[in-house]
Amino acid sequence: MARVTLDKVNKIYPSRHGDVHAVQDLDLAIEDGEFVALLGPSGCGKTSTLRMIVGLEAISGGVIAFDGQPVNDQTPEQRNVAMAFETYALYPTFTVAQNLAFPLEVKGVDKATRDEKVAEVARLLRIEPILDSFPRQLSGGQQQRVSLGRALIRDPAVFILDEVMSHLDAHLKFQMLFELKRIHQTLERTIVYVTHDQMEALALADRVAVMSDAKLQQFGDRDTLYDRPANTFVAGFIGEPPTNFLEAEVRDDGTTMRLTIRDASAAFVPDGPRAAAIRDQGLRTVIVGIRPQNLHVRHDEGDEQITATVEINEYQGEHSILSLRDGAAEFRAMVPPSVKTGEGETIDLSYRSRDVMVFHPETEVFIS
Ligand SMILES: Nc1ncnc2c1ncn2[C@@H]1O[C@H](COP(=O)(O)OP(=O)(O)OP(=O)(O)O)[C@@H](O)[C@H]1O
Ligand SMILES: [Mg+2]
Image 1 (cartoon, protein in one colour):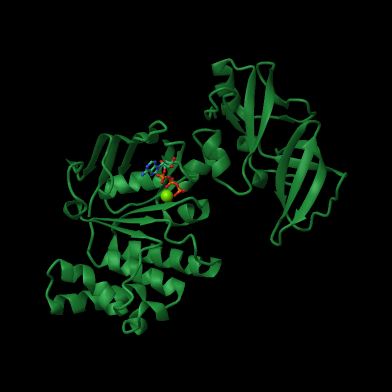
Image 2: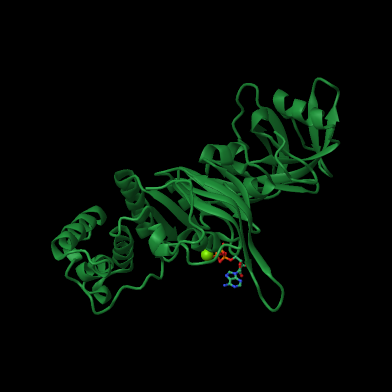
């Protein structure tokens, strides 16, 4: 097991058309036994980061250390890291058991120990009934488990998974998420899991590192990412449907602050601590963020209210998504499917002032 630290890690790919700075000054401290997800849009540098941790890619700058020992110059074997890809091909002429045993055979592990290990991993992944099958006889999900098994059997200090589930159907994905979580709880192994799917990241990981544009945007648990996003990128990336962002002018009489939405009639009222933070920065305009889940049709004691016109009422089964307009401002709300307000009709919505997020108008950094 290992604690993995990245200190100002950079990856630059030289190219004839100019260098690609794929990872920029990345700092990350992954605790021993922690399950961490690297989350971000395509091309943000997730795979490059993993490949540097594994040792498959040279580090252009900075230090990667396992348990405090720099591993920059170590081979993947010396680091004892196992990586599983979605496309991790199994040997077609080997049975599942032989596929699993292979990494041990390469290491020169004796037959009895190999058999014992294969049985143990097969039990963990629940693939005992298919040990004598060949890969072509397996379903996609079964093949994936065998791939995972082949990485796990090496007893790695760090276990790395890159988009291992992106081609699985929703049902299998759910099953594998559950299995992975169970494996992590059983083995207490340090796991780094890469995905661009926030649902997977939030469901699995103790902490999520959100990346965009080669840079780490925020590293935190789901509540922190959800309630205190570092900037508009994280606020927009975490949560479905995404956070509504609205430009607003600050109207402040020193006791009550109203954030008046530009070219619209609505105004949001931030709670006391938020108003104080805006006052401290002396801002005249801000970006207001409000999650569609935090705009309600019911009105609770102390809630604030806004009115908007419904443009689309989209039924989605367990809830409906209202696309709303107020002047030039457009935003969305998630409401119960019993809300039948139709196109062109107005609706009153409530929110708690503490659910109003406020961001800096230029830096887009979270203020409060
Ligand atoms: N070997 C390479 N040579 C040159 N550029 C590369 C190389 N590998 C990756 N890149 C570039 O580095 C950037 C980051 O790529 P990376 O594969 O790390 O992204 P990613 O976050 O894993 O994306 P995805 O979600 O699509 O897998 C991209 O702009 C990519 O084009
Ligand atoms: Mg990738």
